[in-house]
Each structure stands twice: as structure tokens, then as C-alpha cells.
Length: 153
Image (cartoon, rainbow, N blue to C red; front, side, top):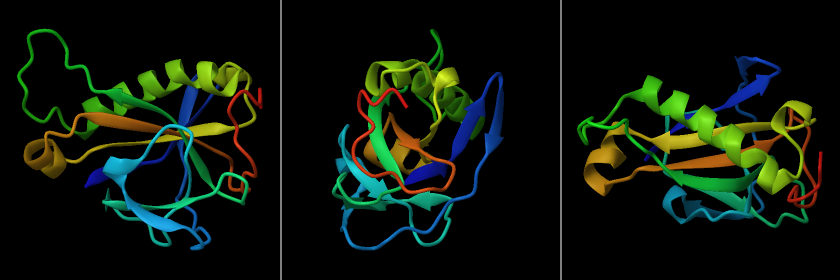
């Protein structure tokens, strides 16, 4: 399972968004099977931990597109113990902001879109040796149609 954190950063500030219900016309896949370039709808209910996500064709309306998957890099000298949600959230915001422009084609601060991310829960960290952060492009609630890759939106 992964902790679901939905975050958007505007200018120099960050704000939390609520999860949106999505159309259930896709395939439910494990969050461990997400690949960059795949599109998804949000779960119908907001949960703290997420193990499956609904994959849909990017040609259809969707709410999120995976644009980066990054391994968590612990600070030098730290243990392999679960770093906690705050540390993972801070790391996720940084890595997702850095990976945004290479995928979307425009700097995050100049984009009309937002990003959100999933990071490991304490359970998946310990049981599955999960260290991946998954970054998703999203909107302010309006569905996306088509891939946002190199869209410069």
C-alpha cells in the first residue's frame, strides 16, 4: 500500500486538494505496476492508503497521468528505517517538481496543470521494500483528455 498524498504547488506555496471521484471504465491495477505515461482515474473514495488504482486510456477522460517514478534517496548517514510521512512528502514535492518540465515541456510554475504523488506507506516500506515515489500530472478537477507529455500546458 502507498500513502496517497495529493498536493499542488502554486508559485512558492503549496496547497492540498481533495481527491475526486473518477469514471470506473478502466482496469484496476496495483500501484506497484504503474508506469510512466499511463493514465488513471482517482479512487471513488479518499483513503489514506492505496493499493490499487484505475488505469484508463489516455485518449479517454482521466484525472491523472504518471510522469515520473523516483526512488527515495535518504539523506547521507541515515538508517533504512521508514523516514515518516513528512520526510517522504517533502522529498516527493521536490522530486516531482524537478521531473515535471522534462515530461510536460514547461516549468511547473508556468503550467496550468498541477502535480500529485504517491509515496510508500510504513507497511509497504517494511513488507515490500517499497521506496518509489510516483508523480502524477493532474488538473484542478477538470478531466484531462489525451497525454500531457510535451503538451507545454
